[in-house]
Image: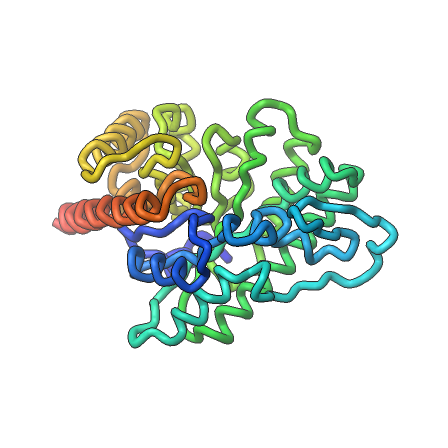
Length: 337
């Protein structure tokens, strides 16, 4: 999907979630997401509910050479590589996703758009290497697996939520290895691998970069949406962010911290986001595009928080998104004038 088509699933000032929530009940988690993020609800991942919803095993289980131990660890049997992938959603490993889709489909007002998330090929490849698979095989298999699941997610939304636009984030916490020169795959090959997964989907595709992961790699892969934590060092990549926006790319701003306590008010978080935007503008980014091609999220997943803390983070993300929406409207009016 091209960057221009990202507008199908996105409008300025949406809020959505990133990855995990801390609930044990899948239906409760789905209801929280739909209630707190009505404009772009996110299908939850629930690793506290079962190890099978852990971010690696939830998807790597489709590979025939991968068996999942009761504790959620990966056991390899490379003699089974020739068998077909088992890409199917089940209530145990995908409880949060399936409850979300079912609840969204039965709402009186069906969501106009939904956001889903899957472990990316680089992170899955690293996990397979650590489990004992040769690197040359591991990353190719990870890309095949992720691509198959992306297509399955496309089909799931089309079947169960017809007419609903979808966005799929590829979650790549392992990008931190590329920023530290510790990755088991060369950078150019990593860009090509990630880029290949981002093409061919009917959904708007995005890449979530955790913390100090290699943001540049996500931009180089051509992700239509790049999800970034709001940090002062984002200005180091001002030129790349500017080019991404000029090419009609979007940024999902992780403006609600998930690694420290947050208060009840969005004021401080809004000042942090505005400060980063001002500095990016000074370094050449278009201030209109910064606001009109922006959505808001928590910085990372929320499984490590309590339910009330998680809901507060989602609520704050939506409040910040409302301010982004207001600024985008004002920016467009100014531009029109």
